[in-house]
Image (cartoon, rainbow, N blue to C red; front, side, top):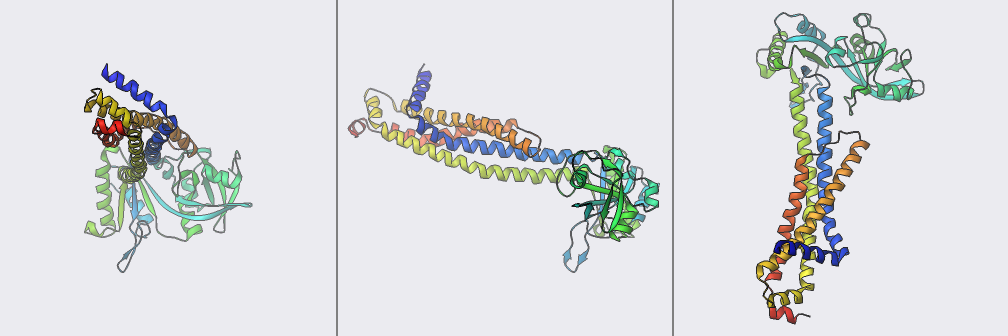
Length: 407
């Protein structure tokens, strides 16, 4: 009964000054809202990136050239010229590799693309027909590049849906239209299915051309920027990585793996790196948001101290009538905890709503972790206890006679 009476009295006390109670809870509401929204958006971003990477295939390996060195300076990975078409053909034709299903030689670069008065800067990918299977690219209209196109150095292109919108507008089938890339006119033979994505490696914002056309007609290159390799199954990824590595070392006449002029990445490697980066970024943002929780806690402590001052005579009267120190402490602690829990609950609801709205606006998966909900309630209660303890102790330590004399 005593606990119920304390709760009832605390609620009544908080309702006496609704403005002060609302302002005190506002700091907690803002803090909890910020933490939940940022955690949700961070996890949504991570989920979106993971979905994009996994959509490329769970058994995909990518071989990249290592950056060229100039003195002590190492260039960015992938900027080297150590991979050639001969390497890709050797990988595809050798009987030494038992874990490889398909090989896709690739050359990519960015260029300005024009169609009539419209233009866009996008990624141009020179590829073989195997690229579509390995990279899980589907065509919704027309067809993908054929081996005949590669052998004939055909001036044809398959474009992503974002490129189609940028160059031709919404709802227009671009197949059969012409585009100009680096002074060359290419005929569009296919439009890919939308996969979703963002950034420089967005498959929806890319143009696919025959590898021979990209190298000889558009960029004047003789090397590859990457080689895509599809393993026979996800279970042999590590074995395939090792087999490819040792085979290319032999192909490049290198003995020491430390001297390798290439690097091999699997989808799990990329996922692990992305997860680490996004987790760190989410934790950083959440830490910044948590500062507002500290400010909110200090605000609640200040409000409770003011309340102690205003209720000094009441406290003195209660102690003179026999109220024990523990009851006074519980009374003020309960008020502080109720204040923070209400703020935490409201902040949790607002944070979930904001996360949902922002996720839809920026096209991210809506993710709310149970841990963030538990965090909201737990942190709210903890703040009430931590920042309500000192005012409660101050109230409980008041001497009855001095309190009754207080004006």
